[in-house]
Image 1 (cartoon, rainbow, N blue to C red):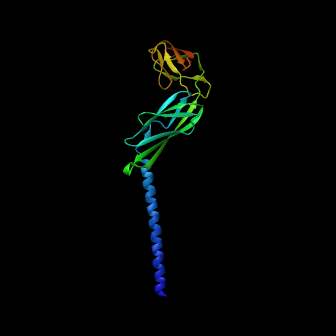
Image 2 (image 1 turned 180 degrees about the horizontal axis):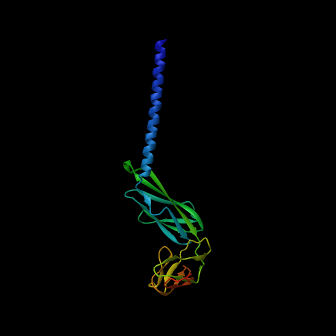
Image 3 (image 1 turned 60 degrees about the vertical axis):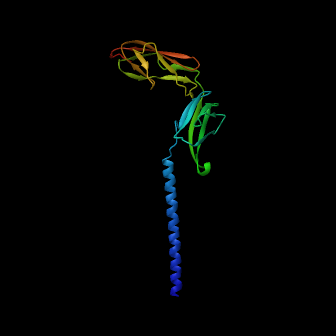
Amino acid sequence: MKKKRFRYQVIAFLLLFSLLADTTSASAKSSRSKKKEAQSPYSLNMMTANVLLDDSVTLTVDGITDQTVSFKSSSNDTVSVEPGEDGISCKCTGTGVGRATITVKIKEKGFLFFNNTATQLTCKINVTPKATSVQFNRQQIRMSPNTRKRVKITLRPSITAEIPVFSSSDPKIARVNAAQKIVAKSPGIAVITATLQNGTTASCRVIVAEKTDSED
């Protein structure tokens, strides 16, 4: 009777040991998998992008050495993809207003040149129509030298992501920087012009003068 009970205890111990070993092994595999994912050598030059209808952006994979790369759009009616000759980039063209996800699959060469490991990266692209009109919220702005003020404009249609090209009649007096802020430099008058892709323009007069109590 004691031998039989001892035999059951041994079996129970072996089962428990086996269960713990499997759990530890699974945990180690999961940890290695997460570590590998976090340390992936591949990256995209952009994770999100705004594209105007009929315009294009180039999506590029960094960290590629001897891997094969493929690109796929979740909606060719919204964004079409055209792989580049370099094998690591593609031209993404807005074909319709909406959103699409570009999936980039990277396959690594394994034993005997068979692809046995794949990594996926994604880029979300938002396609909007081009602007048809632009207007400054104010026709005239007064500023003091060495101050900045954000450019306020209204674009139509309102869902467009187009950014007008700004120019100044005299950058030494006032100009628009990359952050779309008017930068007042020295006293004088300058005209800031916003130009759309379709050629439409709008203008705003900037008066730069020493600050007074009546300044706008």
